[in-house]
Amino acid sequence: MPRSLNSIVAVSQNMGIGKDGRLPWPPLRNEYKYFQRMTSTSRVEGKQNAVIMGKKTWFSIPEKSRPLKDRINIVLSRELKEAPKGAHYLSKSLDDALALLDSPELKSKVDMVWIVGGTSVYKPWWVPWAIQDVGAPALLCHLLGPDAVLQHQPDLPSCRELGQGAAAARLSECTSGTRVSSQSQEAMEKPNHHRLFVTRILKEFESDTFFPEIDHKDYKLLTEYPGVPTDIQEENGIQYKFEVYEKTVVPP
Image 1: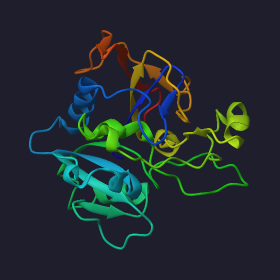
Image 2: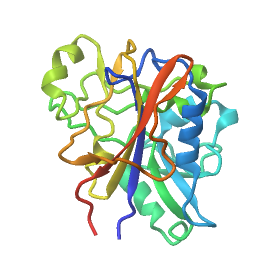
Image 3: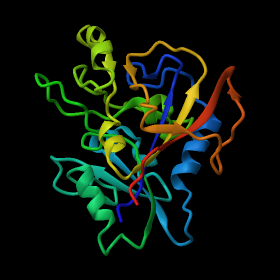
């Protein structure tokens, strides 16, 4: 049985996720704590969750914060020959990482799998004339915590890597330099991708990187989910809410 996957993202009202390699909004301590709790809390005693990220995401995290504690950290890279210092494992692609998680070494040790971005994690719907490497998304700057978030320097995708649904609408922006993140496509399009955890920042922020619209034909918004607050949160004068989307058709 394929292991179910989860993705997590924070977006502004204008679907912005990054500005100049940082979050468009000020650090939100409680939102960060939510990210930490959701990705590190295992449902099974004695097991840990796994987080999968690309090489550039990994190296953008301050060394003192690597690896992300209480989680099995898997780094993706086609270039590295061995896992970078602090990382638990190295894989060449998302598929390789998923195969690793199902290996005898890890199968009985891992509970939930969280996709947190990077070179081979996400697959754009490639524009034929522009196939380039995918950089690490800005959407997870908050994984570093309030003290380090402003130092986080995530890599951004090529401006010509467009999500299928956003391609036509974003083409003019793309060619003028605005980056559109299609990086969640591979994970979200995989049959075993199950849930998408979204923090909706209830304000527009100037951004240069955007998250594609969620396809509501494929994902439904849940009215509630264990451990996820349903009321509107507020920090530093910024309101936000947590949402959980579940794939409408999940393989048995």
